[in-house]
Image (cartoon, rainbow, N blue to C red):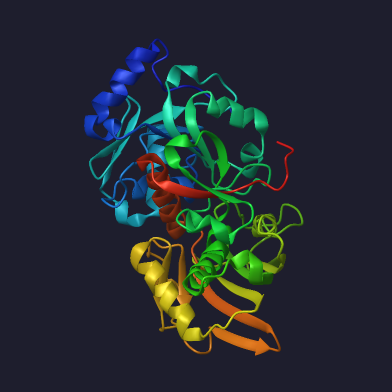
Length: 407
């Protein structure tokens, strides 16, 4: 595909900055936030949620490839119109609420404007100016590429990769406000001290670490550190298909095989995330891709020793967490189907009926089993933006060290 710029080629950096400010002065003053990758699921939902009142520091700029126009009416659709279509397919609620302006290469949703930069990430980006934070949402390849991270760090104080990279420290949304004493490889800092690149983990990682956070808060109530009593953890996943899947089989693999009537076993990035939480051992036994809309499903198992836990204690801690961080967890005793929660901007929906949450003791070992719907698009994006808000506000945040220093 041929890549081209719709930015004004003659514009100087100062001109670009002035145009960005003119799009929306109030939003620009709250910080410049760059989204790299306007994907059909993650990018579209990050943009939509940036127009909602719960987001204090919305995305202001988007760096993405132009989308080729194909099919009927292609001659009348430029790259901005193609992005508009992508947004509508990700969120039909936005029908009639999106406008585009080719004169300054901007896209407006519900009255909020975003400057669109049609570029290749491999190009020189210096003329875009400097950003307070960049969300890298293109691919795991870019998030694990030191050269691409270096390029973005040159124009941004903080770079957040919305996937796992075990070579980077991690800013997991569920653990940002956790007490760092519960995790051996964690530190709490004021977010204004952060700089460089961080992994935010996958949607499944956010779901699993939310269960971990519930146990950490429960341990805090009992005056013990989670890392002292957590022996082993397991997670099983049913993962909805994403827009990267295609009808028809390209090659063998969970993302490449035909999804119709075809359960596809694979692997999840969460297995890498789990390795950060030593000394406990961990395993991701099941990661099954299915042709269904989000959210998906997780079964989490935690094995602990030397602690007395009741189901009611877990439910109480989870509800308290949901009250303070509603983007992270919703607690329900109504185990209706996943479709009911498709439009809930929340990372996980924890089922607390007696058939779906349990605490069992065998000798000195306690097994805790949690079951939850885990959202891999809208709810995941809500967790991401809540995390970036904390970072840009300068809150105290907890991050987890890398466990592989190769990048």
